Length: 94
Image (cartoon, rainbow, N blue to C red; front, top):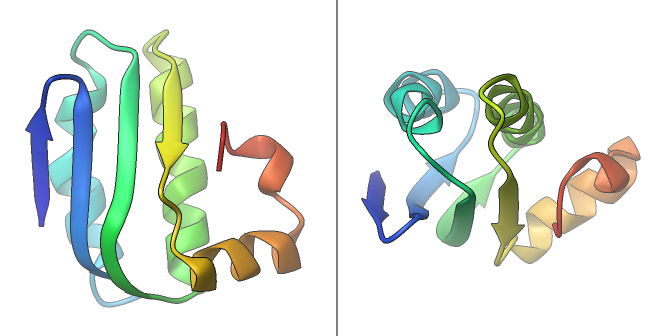
């Protein structure tokens, strides 16, 4: 589920192979709006490698629209995946 308020996009629930396509479709229009955006992942309760790909796509979308993206409250299991894949430096404030 995605909620937007006051420049923050909040995600809750799983970000897995079965949910990332829906999350991408739902979030894409948000990145076309004025930013900068804070991406709050504190409500995410399940992740897999697809979540890392989604984070990278969100960074690309924000950059494509000239927006700054700040990722916060990355769940611990997602932090581990980001480290394993060596992409932490590509994710702003993750």
